[in-house]
Length: 625
Image (cartoon, rainbow, N blue to C red; front, side):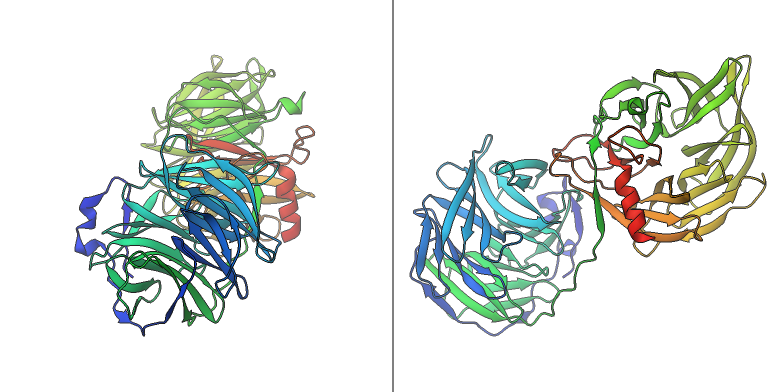
């Protein structure tokens, strides 16, 4: 299947281009036998574990109906159900979760069904506030249940389904997917959301809560009136059209399963065991529900890579504007009152923001397009020792300098020029009692400045310049060991010895083994008298941890997923991060990790920063080393 990627603004005109769509199914499979079910309804959904447990029927006239594997009616949940989907209840072999749309009211019902005794339990009915719901489908991600539903506006809403303390939907994101949609389905293993558009084909979106809002099209050249899509966990999916008596199978290989009888197929549902694929169909012409079986010839899907998932405990107020805005955080520790410590976060569309450890925005300094920021303590100045923050400012190609008072108030004090043409990343350190600043350019150049004072004003003196082979950004200085670690985005991590001014950088870690380009933010976490470098692997939304005192060995990677209890979304495409092992009160006894979130959802909002308890990072390191 040759599929091209489209962004949302590209609409019908792209559909007409033959070079931008996938080839139609070419392989004609043998016909398969269909058997009618003596129950009226609009869809027939096989429910399968390691065997066929029964069939779930949706009926606009009578509701949800539970049938035995032989097609006998066992129980019913009254209503007017147009569409439904189901997933197993985790930890149970006999209970499924059902989400359904009421045709009369457009309410969304959440229910459970005990497949052994046929007992339905309705847990919640959630009204439609803006527009009628038209499609519904479920998915399972990281043991969390997700729900997708499009409405009459062409808006697809993505929710997290929670059952404690009450059954409810938590909004995650919304996507404009367009009108004339007939059905949706999700392939859980690949997290692919499939949406059928009549007379066009099947659109494929990321079903991940942190996924990009882009799509590809599986185009049907014969132009059937596509009505329904159903997906298997392994990525294969099946499509039917009212004007073609066939079942289309799409995936790694495409097949067309012709029917022996002329049919107007309106809906399709599938479920599989290792040996068989169970198919449920609705023929609009005859009004019949039909069952069929196909031999499951696909190999078993490989187990998904198990990636450790941490969760954020706090999130900051979002920045003011949508787009790529929030970038890099720094942590200021209040030595007198650690619980009053601060997070400094750059907003590269505005300036520098200051947040409490509860995520509240305390200050917003409009100092320009500041990109990266770092903090150092007790720097000698003509008026005494001060805590300082320094940021790279892309508005003026300068170093922005800020004082941090003991009260936590941040004041902008100076802009110091550089000779770079496009300042980008920055980090600072105190080496032999002198504050040094490392700032890089997008062309790979690094400059090292010494920050001093003249006439009570900060000044920056260029000490040396060196170059990495391609674009860098994130860096961190280990003051005690006189080292700077630098990320070359497309390659890996470099180290430079600061005890010798003219020392050459050396590459200590390459991307691979779960670490993907771009290498972005980084920080050093100390645990049990050992140092660990934490770097953001932006390309796969993970974080890599390296044991600096063990030959820079990669311990492993983790991701930051949804914290359903706190209603905090996961983290994607992180630019900047900072970590500290310093205790900051009861909530952060082993320090703190702060990361930028490139896609802030649940609900959709401008970018922000997520705060992760350092104890979670410490636990990960101890398990891996």
